[in-house]
Image (cartoon, rainbow, N blue to C red; front, top):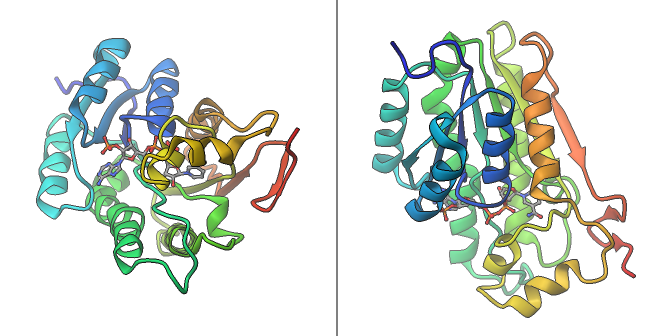
Length: 253
Ligand SMILES: NC(=O)c1ccc[n+]([C@@H]2O[C@H](COP(=O)([O-])OP(=O)(O)OC[C@H]3O[C@@H](n4cnc5c(N)ncnc54)[C@H](OP(=O)(O)O)[C@@H]3O)[C@@H](O)[C@H]2O)c1
């Protein structure tokens, strides 16, 4: 008997922290079986300890073809897949277009754009067979570019375009495509990674903002949109804290 017999099974990339980990928790709470994908085993192991048998994991670097292929193969050997939640992603740096590094842009494209594409392509046949869903966590950065956000905004715009085009190309097939674009979400690692571990710069992002979104807020959008009937496609969700009108129009106390 397949491990997911009787339960919907979701794959969540970037499940080792932040929005991905929260999404895994929220989906398990709704009765899903979840397979988490990420590179840091100790984090995935801890989540497995917390969530029990409903959560398993595969180590996977979505920027690496062989690693992704092995992970996808292992997931599919365990049974059908009803949803793919693309959460793995990062912002790197906050430099101007004039001064930003090609390596930073390349790394964001490799992870945010090509990593999402690579894993989505590999799961599509299984998702079609299961009448499943591709979900992409993009960002409002992909809607409203801001100064210093060049590479990140461009990569997130590309993810949104990918979701939209995939949706059009799949019309007539039993696959939903959902794009969730969050604004400011206060997760533990996102901004610290963006600023190369500089905690002061990372904390300044959220300074004085009464209630930035939490990873759990986004996870709630994930589980809610996936939980709709198979024939109802929540094409796009744009979700921001009440205090944020745009990236540059934020209320701070
Ligand atoms: N926080 C925000 O304000 C915000 C707003 C809008 C959108 N988002 C988007 O939401 C997603 C999650 O962000 P977050 O705030 O939860 O950040 P986070 O805590 O830093 O999570 C990023 C996740 O991506 C994984 N990852 C990074 N590189 C990877 C790779 N090469 N292969 C596989 N997994 C990889 C990380 O795991 P490992 O390091 O273990 O591999 C981690 O689990 C990102 O796509 C981000 O762009 C965030």
